[in-house]
Length: 280
Image 1 (cartoon, rainbow, N blue to C red):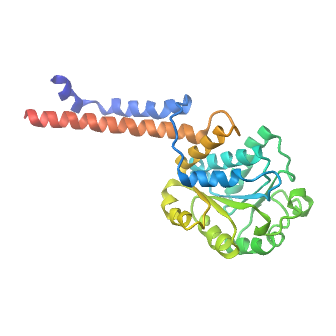
Image 2: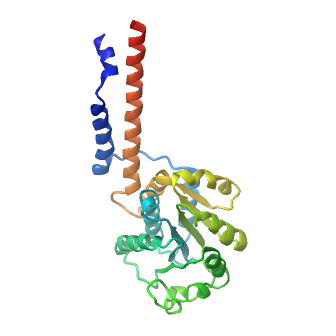
Image 3: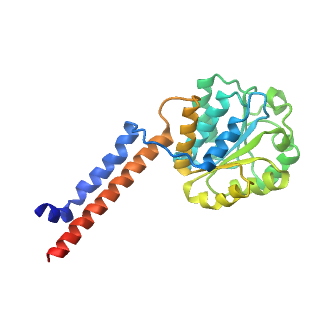
């Protein structure tokens, strides 16, 4: 039974190399591991999917920075693809100054796929300092906070913004949040104060704090981390809104395979350990 004894002597270099390959290969060649869609993600998808080109705009707030890009940026891309495929008008903004870069990167990536026109199909308000003042001000009159868009164009000159006055002028708000300011402020000011419909996407570590508000229906739906992003990508693909390689789904393939191999090595190590112990 030398084989069982050798299980406790696998060189760590072999273990590290195997796990590295397990993580790297799915990022190069997608495996397509099936994704189980959670009810919270499905609720948000269905809320957006119920909208049409005749609906009021969706307001998406990118409240994150490049550190959270692997988890939250795929959510932004998937939501934009869904909205643009259904011709739902979109207004973008950010409570983080770094979020403006995320928005511009997403716009450059997604708009060419759907031939969307700025000012008619989507608009970008940008970032404005003063979270509470910004969110409360938008509840009264958006022009008092954003008289011009991110590029300096008066918002009254944008066709889709002419009837955009406050939260009553939008179908729903979706905040992609990595911390503070973020979803808590949107919940406190826009949802609780003005009754705006709110959807939330957060990093996995923050998801537990949001679940209670989904249960009380203050939050329409929730995307939790890379798993939530991959679920949304899966629903977007199933509906035929987009095709190709999806970042979050690839990331979940790598993560799942890496976790599986770690579990296998733990089991192998324990088998070898208990056999050696019994033999002694």
